[in-house]
Amino acid sequence: MTLLAIDNLHATVADKPILKGLSLTINAGEVHAIMGPNGAGKSTLGYVLGGRPGYAVTGGSVSFQDEDLLALEPHERAAAGLFLGFQYPVEIPGVSFVQFLRESLNAQRRSRGEDPLSGGEFLKLAREKAALLKMDMDMLKRPVNVGFSGGEKKRAEMVQMGILDPRLAVLDETDSGLDIDALRVVGEGINSIMRAPDKAVLLITHYQRLLDYVKPDFVHVLANGRIVRTGGPELALELEERGYEAVAA
Image (cartoon, rainbow, N blue to C red; front, side):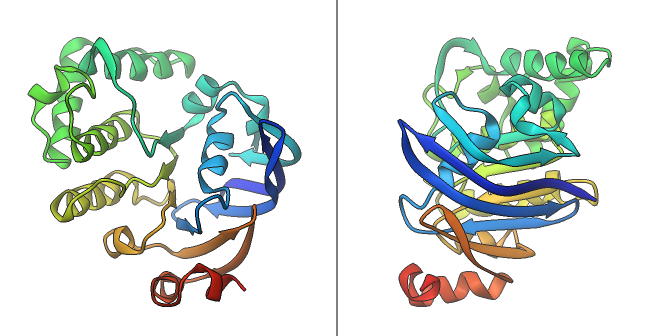
């Protein structure tokens, strides 16, 4: 089953063309990695899929579960099963993380016609997902990401992903700021949460190191706003060895 189908996507930021005819198909059960140099359009792709304001689609189409993704508001995309992980998760002072997560989940459940979880039901779920990421529940009682290290922010974001249980996770440089131990924990968390026949992952990354833990089925090289080469996991090793310019030429 095709979860995401991107066809000839063009997008601009501040009237500057960034994506220039990008096409990509992701099927259920697959993990795709997109790699490429700075300025290639990797993060722009994630923001366009998530519906971030200021990222204008000027051509092409994006279908998510056979629905026009670009016609949906950001909260509708999330409720439909799309999760966007940020390179730099934001801090929200004064807002309890656990309350934020509960409200997020129940808002999505209501939009799908499902009953919201009670406080007890939610806390049981949150403890289960936090344990996967080796995160103390006391951390989630603090304001959203306030005082968290880079690694703690990424692990908290993976806890959020586990609670929301998306169909497709678009993870923008989730390995950024992680030490060796945190990288392993986050990688194992992604596998536990998203490795399933009805789910898929799109990893956006500069480096091969995360792919040692979350092994992709396909690796794509993004350069100048387009996918210029596709291969298996061995392509990431080639990029690490030879660099983007040599491989994408």
